[in-house]
Image (tube, rainbow, N blue to C red):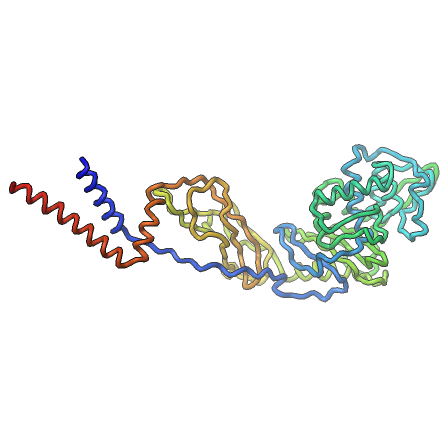
Length: 436
């Protein structure tokens, strides 16, 4: 019995040793250079700027994006968002008392034109805050929601924390300069991206003009006009390029603008700050148009992977039934790319282990697949396993033995010789027993 078992083990070792050994060699991919607009540098007046492709979740351009700024009236993006989230009925009314107007005149804050003792709706206050950049409206919203501006600011800072705005802090609802009231253009971009997911906010944000009806205190209505629209008209620019925006201006923050734009299926977001102190220069508008128009003119959406195409194949280790993982597109993959780019010029770089080591769980992250055009990163995908794949113990535990003999030629020769010797001995013994 033991002799038979020993023979089987020796024969198994012989078979394993004689199996072909496949060496898979793959070069580690070079780190992708995440250049912006293929190295294009914009000639901007603003000291800080950021441009984002929201459709592909990709930063297209940035300039001192993490430097602290005075956000000026871009603050009111947060004011309006927090107010919307805490007001159930926009037709609720409040009477404007002295607390609403206190200190605004002395601070030279922009106002919508509301009067003391006037009864207004929350809807009117929201539009007046965003469109006319009214500090009176912003203050009124805060008092209605939280009882005081100070309490409302706590909600603003809480929201900033929820959104991951790590370099942002508010001390007021209006954006008036204060050393402890700061943000970055990167944080303002995150804030605006989140805010426009709110349908009510987006509706207000996109509005160019809004009429406040007259009432018992103020008999005549007020035609509110977007501060951004006014600057666009002064520059003679086309109005339909920008979807919506919130301007800002203080001595500390200079000219600012947070805006969005659509073009041929791509959604853009831009934030600029410190565009100078000449209020009539329109530098904030010009810088936004400079960035938007460059991409409108030179970039377009391109299909880089067609539906049904296998765009990545990874070998699988230690599994008999499955030797590879194939990733097939269930729909066309499009991305923003240079207009003159040929689709066959796109190169793929996989960042991760080149061979999948079992066991793996379903949806396990395997790596990142980057699509490159020259040095420009077009887009990237998280590559996750589409199924659970188990490990075969025999393949797993035999690998160290195979690797040992693969790297030790002398040991391999000796083992093969020993195996053949054992086989010869077994055969000789069988023949010898016939004559006994």
